[in-house]
Length: 43
Image (cartoon, rainbow, N blue to C red; front, side, top):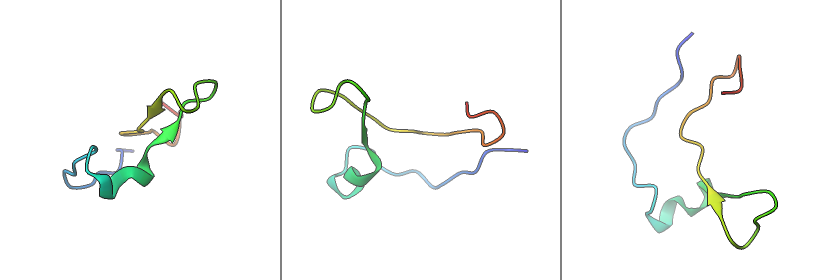
């Protein structure tokens, strides 16, 4: 099974701020953005 895709989007555009999540243990210091995930393995 292949991963789903979306058209290119600018991760740094303020309109996409909701996609960023705080890194556990580093709240208010670091955020991460999930670019892809394999639902079968979680990778």
